[in-house]
Image (tube, rainbow, N blue to C red):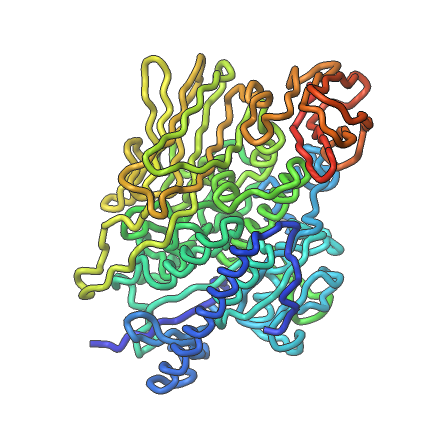
Amino acid sequence: MKKILFILFILCASSTYAQNNKRSALEIPENNKLKLIEKSKELKEQSTERYNIALEKFPKSITLKNGQRAFLQGIDEFDKPIYSVLDNYGATVTARANHLFDGGSLGLNLTGAGITAGVWEGDYIRDTHEAFNGRVVNLENGNFSVDNEETSHATHVSGTIVSNGINTSARGFAINANVIGYNWTSDYSEMSTEAANGLLVSNHSYGSLPIDSNGNVTYGSYGFGKYDSRSRGLDDLTYLAEYYLPVISAGNSRDDSTAGDYDLLYGNKNSKNSLIVAAVKYVSEYTGPESVEMTTFSSWGPTDDGRIKPDISSRGRGVYSSDSFSDTGYSSKQGTSMAAPGITGVILLLQEHYYNINTSYLKAASARGLLIHTADECNTNFFGADGPDYKYGWGLVNAKKAAECISNDGVTSLIYEGTLQDGESFQLSLDAIANEDITATLSWTDPAGSVYISTQEDMLNYRAPVLVNDLDLRVSNTSTTFFPWKLDPESPSNPATTGDNIVDNVEKIEISNSTGSYNFVVNHKGALTNGAQNFTLILTGVDSSSLSVTDQNLNTLSVWPNPSLTEINFKFPASEKTTQLMLYDIRGRVVYEDIISKGNGTIRGQIDTSALSRGVYILKINQGTTSIQKKVVLK
């Protein structure tokens, strides 16, 4: 039998830092921060121990059949070695992110300012590149020095996320965001520490594959689709850090003639809580599924238990971005490595937009759910069949639609972050917007599952779900109950059906041409681990404006009518302290301000909005150190 090696690789088809550096305005509770720092130490110790054990048994480096050098990183749970090796304007248009930019159709002028993305790679980013203007910092072993294949990849990925657009054809997604760079050694330990510092998103355009002693990938082995220690480790980390979302490239295995098409996800690509990205070709204008064409290399699912992976698709062919051969160098590359940073950039912009409106960030489950909720249908091979598939995941990313969902929250959409207690259910009734489609998406960050260890034969395509807390979403009207999409791993090329989904920690229901009132219910099967489960429910195509008066988080402030035409009324409890009332526009500018003397009872008032532009505003009440706020829409 051939000896199997496990190779960690960058998916491209062609700690020295200040611990108190904040990566966003996110305030991490001290007890959560301590848990993440402790987890970081634990993971660092594990990584060092596994490397030292591996070093006693295996060579520090090997040469693959294709001539590439691979370097030892450690061992996996089966005591087999893990080796590491290397594996935009057009991208922003494909993602519809250009609508969020300065001069974009939404008028948001988002740049990612104030937020940092993490980039884990095989080597340094060329931090002196003109595209970065001081916003990129390598946090391991000093700054960039030598151009090579690994630094080229790292610089290209980072440019897709944050390039300033000095070369207009290579503009990144978030031109004022920052990047911190690490190499992939001890990545989970470093990710845990950074999550404690408020990191919201990170990019990982690498993974692992099983390689035999002759340098060939052993496709068809039990590891493909398997929930292993790498995928479990990510779920364990993200469950502790509920605002932190790792974005991971799906892999490029379909470029190998021996690979086949399905069941090609390996290692960290089988985690439940991360966002796994497939690569498609450039889309100049989306008009329907026929607009999107899959690349020849992007790896397809399913996971062994049938989960819908990859999650989302973005451009990964012919992506033009910064390169490391000079401070003014640029190049085109392809691979799922190039698709993942586009999604990372979109998340930066959406988090900025959400913070501008709510002065808080989306939880990771919300960000992941929002991208899935607003994705566009891709697969034309199903002859018009709707729903997800194991190729494109939930479809092509649509940053414009996701931003609109945030803007219209409390009007024609709803983004609700709640907690389901053991034995309880969550229910909500809303009216449909006549003749529009209702979409309902439930997403949650699930606790880490169990890694099944048995014989290689028994582990091959082991179908038992790794879902721990099985939440359920149901939508009903007076005549029908609607169920979420699901896929069948035994027939991966078949179109999606609807029914009881027992494997995915995201459930999506779509209802065409809806009318009347609908009831939305979230419940669960069995007992919830840890006695409760946080979740996010996202709705579009509904009239959610009635919720603005009775919002559970701000029920001391009432605002009506909302949406408003020419004035808004408000009432809230008086205080012994002077009250400051302010109305902000979506860019954070104060357009109305008033000071109300301290008093007793209830304060009531009215604001004339007839001279204000139509759009989304924030009404904020400050009383001493206490503040509450509510979104107001002028139409």
